[in-house]
Every structure is written in structure tokens, then in C-alpha cells.
Length: 263
Image 1 (cartoon, rainbow, N blue to C red):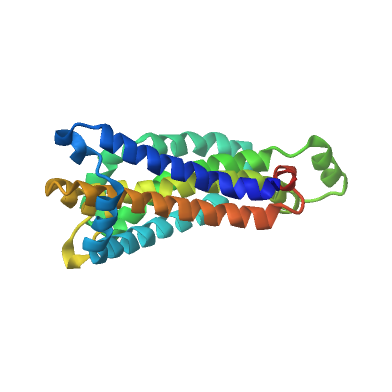
Image 2 (cartoon, helix red, strand yellow):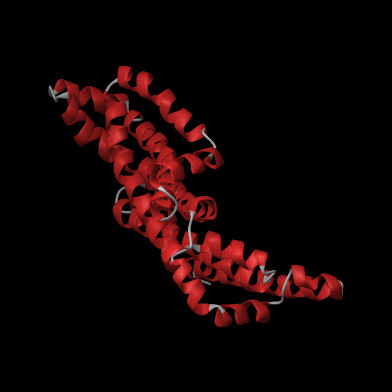
């Protein structure tokens, strides 16, 4: 079998095995405990029964996740260029970036409610905070990880510091940037879901998957709860797939890690 075709088929084969294992595990549970792991038919019925609510919540979560993720991607590039431009700036600001990442979201959430109120703005800010740090760390590391010979060649040509940064270091940092982007693409939907759970609101009929999951849990609608979880996973997969496709389009012509994967 063609190796490329095999790569495409294996995830679907594994998914089929997982679904089969799910059904077998459901059947093996005592009848009184099967509600903890509903069979697939009941979960798919939950999609039909709660379709409008799930669709609205998914759209809301996707919008807030993409907004926070987009802000993190944009501002992280500017922050990384600033950090890489000077060791003094890096030593001064980097500890505070780490401190910002270390503050638990459960503590930030009530502060955000006081500052900007519950709802989409707070959800976007939490998503941004969760997505921002991996991007800054990876991109800054990429900007600093250029071969010494190439740096010396630029300096022999009397390139300015910003020419060196933008023309040499920035292209070399692209693989690192996309690595951080993939990590943030995984974290952004998680951040949006968690933030919606902590700082979301149902005012105006707008709520995300976090509050939707909370409501299903309170009503003991277990199949609908699993359906909500699957939609959250689907959002993460879609965002990571989009980032991976963009990385491949950008890098496969010249970067070894992408060109090698085609063989």
C-alpha cells in the first residue's frame, strides 16, 4: 500500500477501533452504571435533540477562541521581536511574562468580571492569556537560534540590527513560530471553554460550550454532555488542522522537517 495512503487511512482505522471499544465497554458495564458511558446512538440522538443549542454554543466558543488566538498570534510576534532585539529587554521583561502565565485562571476570572464584566470580552482575554505564552517562548527561541556563521555573514555585510532580525532571524524562526502556533491552537479552545465556564453568561441568549456543559450536567443529561465534549474536541482538531496546513504551505518547500514527511 502506498505510504501516503496508509498515513491517511490509519487515523480512521484507529477511530473505528475506538468506537468499537466504546460500544463494547458500554455493553460490559452493569445496567445500573451504563448511563456513565452512553452508547453512541444516544450521543448522536443528543446532537439531534439539542442541535440548535449546541450549534449556537459551538459558534460562540469558536468565535471567542479564534479572537483570543488571533490576538495572541499577532501580539506574540511583536513581543518576540522586541525580546530578541536586546538581551537587556529580554532579561527585564521575560520574568513578568512567566509570572503572567503562572497566575491561575481561576484567580484571574473574578478580576476580569470586575474589570470588563462577564461574557465574551472576558472569555477572549482568558483565551489570549492561555495562548500567548507558548507563542512568545517558541518564537523568541527561534529568533535566537540562528547559526553563528549566518549571523557573522550578515555582520560582515554591515547589516543593521533590525535588518539582521527581520531578514535573517525572522525566516529562521518560522518553524519555531508554527510549533508555538500549534500548541496555542490546542490551548485556545480549551481556554475558551474554561473561560466560558468561569466568566461566561447566558445574557442575551449567548453562551458557549462551557456553560452549555454546565447546564447539561445540572440536568443530568449525560449523552448531551458527551456531545458537548465531542464538539469541543472538534473545534480543537479543526484549529490545529488549519495551523498545520498553513505551516505545511509555508515551510514544506525548504524546511527539512516538512519536506522529509513527504517521503
